[in-house]
Image (cartoon, rainbow, N blue to C red; front, side, top):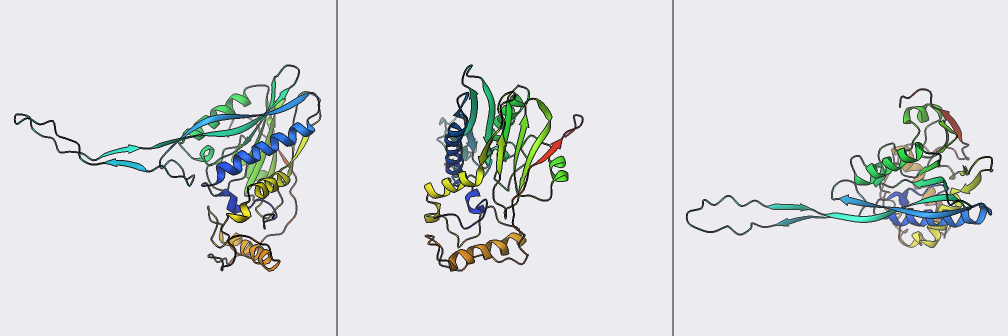
Length: 299
């Protein structure tokens, strides 16, 4: 059963389930690239360990604070007893975050890194963001191409192109893919994506004069949705997390009402939507890429 939305399904952005979406999408992209790369290259999944501290960001799997009661006193009549504190220990959760590398088959050299951003990468002060930005800086200082895909509306701007230049070069967008080639670090190929749009087919650069390969993000996301059986687990009767702005609330309600009228058999889909919208939907149609050139060293 396909998602009712024409592009990114905003219900997949819920941080509580994003890790599954993230890892599935990277795995399917790796498989697709291996199919089309030809004899000179191969794709491999990589991963980094991220430590989440309670309260840093919302992944939906909350690490509770462990609270212990008063401890035992030291005893002894000659020793003044201190007021017993309540001890709070911050829980940590460790998980693995996947990314993708394209390597040259002859020398096993990394030629392109493909990153799919996670809530941790976009959460200020988090371990996941610090590790992501360090990896991003390492790639940008090397001879490796960088492809970044951000399918999350919430969180801090994270892709390599400066946000001010991206916003100025393209009309308003909700998601973005960004390609930076090793042979021209000042130029960024930007794929601005609105919620109403089909996800783009993006060009992924290789080495030297070898032609780019094309990844169809919408097709890959549909595989994630189908194989993850999200039609059976997403509650479309509730508003998505993070919430939509008023303009998109009405549009999303219309999309879901239309899907219901067509008899799409979602598992949780039979009660009135819990949110109201008062804005207007936007037109449809694919977006092309925009090339942004950075002048100077400012951000």
